[in-house]
Length: 401
Image 1 (cartoon, one colour):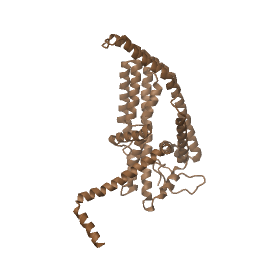
Image 2: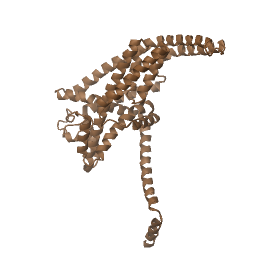
Image 3: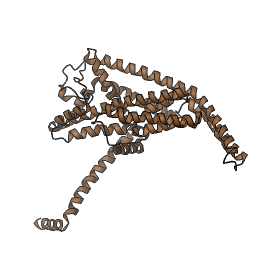
Image 4: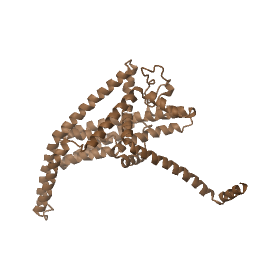
């Protein structure tokens, strides 16, 4: 054994220290990479569970302050959850019904406008700089475009659910979001307190502090993004309606939804509005629409986001772009939607987790964000002896200590 040990020592000594350190780093990084790949693989196979849970968590971040406010006013927590959810369903359902009806009613008018524009382009091509093309070639191209629009109009206005499998997946995901949201709003703090008991006692409070800090940033992100999206949609939608652009309300709805995908979503939705204005009303209205969108986005970037987002939620633009790109590659539109909230959560959670004094780091984070949401732990009717506030989960953005 001594001989073998001496041989190993001699072999180690013959290897450059740089190579030994590189090898040590390499196998550790490979293990981390393998763990990340395995996690992504599991999430991909459980997407129908993971995505609804993530969406329900974002909705919880938006609605739990209202539930807490009603709870503190003496209303039973179950009743508060029911009131908030029913009110949300009424508002969102009414808006969606109105938007869809407006889209169905406006799509034929838009097709007519596009058809008229194509007819105008046909005359311009026949007499303008492209007059060397034959009349038959131009007629074939324009007639094909018009036929394609008219033949696909029914598909645009009748729905996008092509298979029974798609409808089943959507209904399953919606039900999972609904039931998860109910339990997170009603007893999310107790659920978080229970799940964090898997960690050793020595690090349990540090993990809970990190979770609270991350959820605090998530609350700030969702609240700020909702406000920014609302301002974008109202501003752009009003301008489009004043100019008489077809499908002004559906376009404003797309702007609202697009704002939840930072940097990319607003650009795509705004570009679509410019294209519709250009086709339906001409290049003058197209330029006016472009100016309107640029003005609203400048207001968003320089006034609204710095005012309502807070430094703790702010993420470097490069991190935002990379996160959206990675989310899009891994999970499409849903991945792009969830990428930035996840980064915002991890940004604050990791800062607190690695801090020498997690409680102090959490308080410093609160000072950066602004006044926190104060709330006691969820007290279920069958569990009057709830845990103290120190064990609060992230469903309270910053629970009372």
